[in-house]
Length: 276
Image 1 (cartoon, one colour):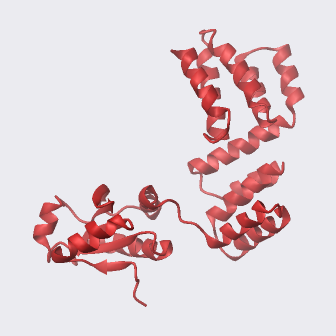
Image 2 (tube, helix red, strand yellow):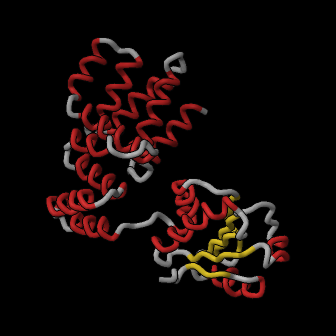
Image 3 (tube, one colour):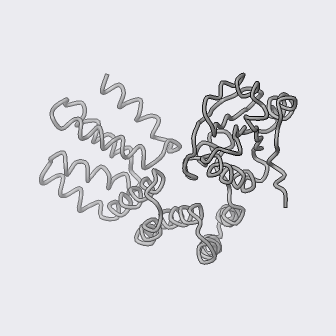
């Protein structure tokens, strides 16, 4: 069955099918040729992505041999070259065959992440407070197929419901990308928060930068990030050999909590003021 989101485009069609069309939906232009080996690797990945995204972007394929003037005007020096158009203008490009994960990251810059409708349905259950139903739905997805989105969502559900061992178990099955690392660190931090008193005592009895960092992470994990940041800022303001370790720990906690957390923005500014 033809892919409705992929089309061959000539120089005569370029203005209408790419430039004008990109004011309505992002358009990725694949400059390729029949004789190009790397093109034969990349093109199927592009076409599969266009199908998966279901119209969130369109793929325009330009045969450079049949459209040499267009290729020259777009300054295509090697193929495959992919140029993204948004709002009638080129906004990004790459050349050469790249891995699927890298390609998806490139696409997400312009169309956002690919959403899984089954995961979205589970999130809808969470929105109405049906935690058990959402967990069952996510587990069912993972029984039927591999889904990083479902696994990360399930891990976040476990973190939110104080089931850190289960969260870490799910996360251990995933590639170690930045989001997986962040969620794993968040689960570890929350586990430390369950033993906050132990870390508090250790710091009071032996106030080193190492025990301070452990105590601060436990505070953040226990839902008291402001106290954690205050403790670390005090060490940073001493401007001694330990201050940089405290600074790094503070940034790590920022990253684990995420920029959407209500106090992160406040304390990023306070950290900047303390440093400069």
